[in-house]
Image (cartoon, rainbow, N blue to C red; front, side):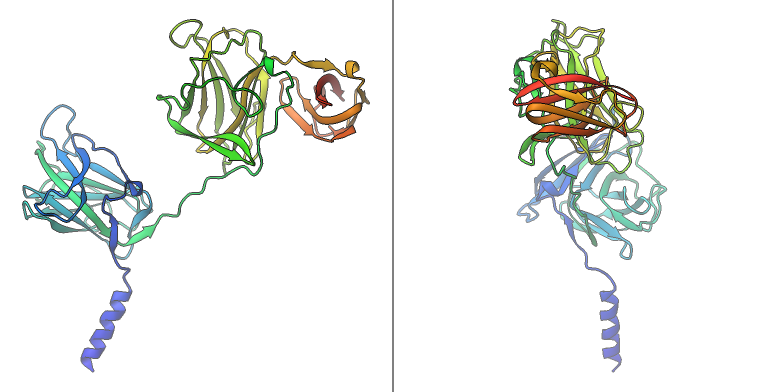
Length: 446
């Protein structure tokens, strides 16, 4: 009876602890990233160094001795992408280690939901694999006790045997690591937000007056690089509701290079770009568009065009979960005959979707309402504006004096009514597309 009671107690105890599993064995590079070594360490993935070894791919660290750029705390970071090390109840992590010399290894778990924590162990079996168990309650290197889930595991090979700090001067040697084993917490993949509808379709009819960097509506110029090699982000081609769109993920900025097809914008007067972003908090967030003129030289010539937008105080403002249309006059005061690059700059975590990025001449292909026999009344008005035409009104848009689209409607009828009661008083431009012809006129909002 006593033995049965003990057995049941052991079973209950074992059930209270989740089973440890191999979290990283360096076989699938999509599961992790390496920092590439720091402060003197260089790293690589290499086959098992042991004669007849069965460990397949392992992490190799070359540890440096004293020298330029070498610090006593040299090491390597393993960033776990698909799982985390869970150190809530079970505070231990096992690592398989191989080297030609005995040494002390200190490891840390960082960037988790609990305190950063350090633990150490001594490797004692030169030229043979040894499993070391690190207990993250030791608080090595002035850290705390682990209590959370951690995506970052750091190796420090130059740790003193007496646990009083790092060896100084550091000692050069090589070690191999494999099978980071612990209780596992699964990382829930982050699903990027996606627009549910495509960007607004441009209504310019005279394509000869457009220099398109990216749009399905016009012939795009040849692009040399997008993103450029000096960008801090990525650009991916995606489709939104059947429309080609660029998906940008920025750490800071993304450059677009089109030196083989420079834009001569001396006859153009406006910049257009549509963008979409989903952000929980837009405070302090910016979206900037920069045009770079080379002026016949081999590089950027100042001043350059920078169009700056925030969540308040700019026209337009950044909005979350909505397509924002920037359609503004090209700035004066700089050359625009040799534009060879554009830069998208933002501190939003993204992704940012963009479409219909082009420069154009707004005066080409636009007729007056009178020339097309279009009636618009009342004018001035304080609330409703009615447009009547002999043909089918395919599209009608209302712009403020800065070129910001305030309203858009596609009636597909000979009559259209716009409610402008919520707009501020001032002068607006009404632009229509009627039977394929573009016309515009001004209206005064009282």
